[in-house]
Length: 434
Image (cartoon, rainbow, N blue to C red; front, side):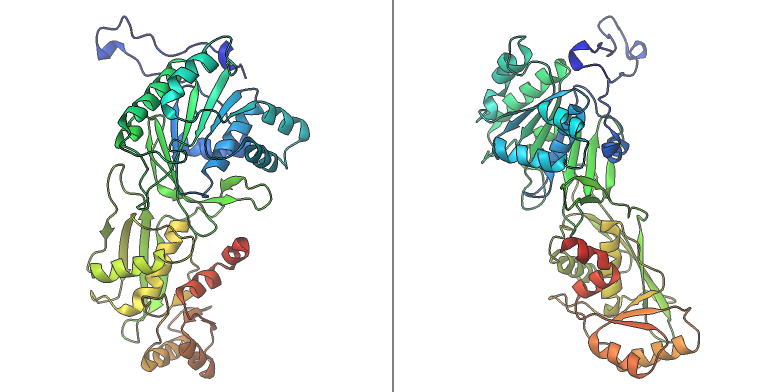
């Protein structure tokens, strides 16, 4: 691939155009990423020279890791990256780069690291335009020829969203980079509410917004804004390699809507709790769509789910439907299956159809015990063949003991808490966490 300074400018010349009819579509020159980042290209459509990208998330979520992955990837292709640091040291960045490239061929890894130039002397973003002019755009500049600039991070050790003048300098820096065909990756903090820190103007001054959240071992990523391709409001579950810390897309991305089954008695039989979790439309707030279901109880259930360690599920869109034969009444026993379907949709995992979840979830995520008659009815229906086998029943302690004593032909899995149900449904989540 040609280096940035040798690349021809393929952007359309619109200077002589007199109407929109005469102006064609822009032809963006892209930076090709390797197979290691195919998942990212697939989601953002293209990584554009001169594009301004914003990557946001809570501390420790993997923002710097992903930024460094991109820098190493383009570095292996001979493209220089200027990596501006104001939160970590050059030594820490070097250590992380060596870890990320540990499984790459030695020659390629060395080439990639040599193309990354760390800079830790830019203490204030208001200095960025001048720094760019003297250090990057000038032919004699120390970092002349950089095709990618990473700013880690915008807020640094602390920058108020009301610092309007400083943010204007950041926007000027981005415009100058775009004019020079230099790609920029801005790393940003988020607020406690999960919103991108800083003024809304920052989001409007970038081309693509990538937002990372937590979901146990996963790092769901959303792309709520993308001028170069489609927006992605469905979670993209990313996994972090234990040895290299490299982020990659989880293989478990089959489902959008998740379904968990339950049992409501001899008259109702098997019922389903269906859920879809997604990011709100760009600029909007999360909402709950749950026909015929009590909003307060659903909000309480979502609050319980959000208390699970490393599960950042607040302020999203929830579409919920409970299919109860011949009924339109919400039953508290739907708490466990509904919670499981919400979690499954968020982490993009499927729930086996033969699983049956029974129990109400209290404020401490405990699974409450079941009525004795419900247990007797379930055992009778399984024995009579009214419920297709195999069957795995997830239920609280006393119910599990009762089903075993009745000799029911099913796998009985005891769940005292919602956490138990999650890790016993997907045991690999606990293994990967540990």
